[in-house]
Image (cartoon, rainbow, N blue to C red; front, side, top):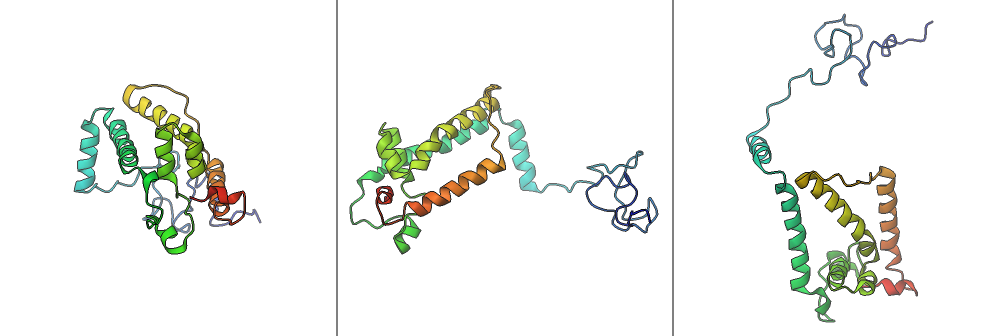
Length: 198
């Protein structure tokens, strides 16, 4: 007994991560994975489906756009958010005004993003303690997000080669876990957690 099954095949027979559709068929039979002269599976051997009209239009616009157009559009979106925070001035809401957050309106609990707009308003006015009081994680992340945006936009628009930190799945998972803990802690009814109420 060699220990080789019909699915596994001899070593090197099926380098593609998926087994042959029907191992009993001879090489070259219908349904076999496309392979080159070396017997290795070749990505792209199957014909790609034709893109639809909208996809072709978007691809044409992207190909013909200057390299700075996408970073400029992203910067415009950031600008709209900043302008909204400045114009709306969320810090001047009436004490008895209904909250705009659906979770807080229905449950009375602060959601993970509650206080973010007010924190942005205070950051734009240079009051970091008040910003951190309304959303500590937002203030903590803001320098990192700003640098990542500048590095990406500079590379896209001007070809800058700023060091770009690689964010692993572990880091993302850790941040999401931290955000979850923060979302729970800010709703606890005991001091000093009541300081995080917004």
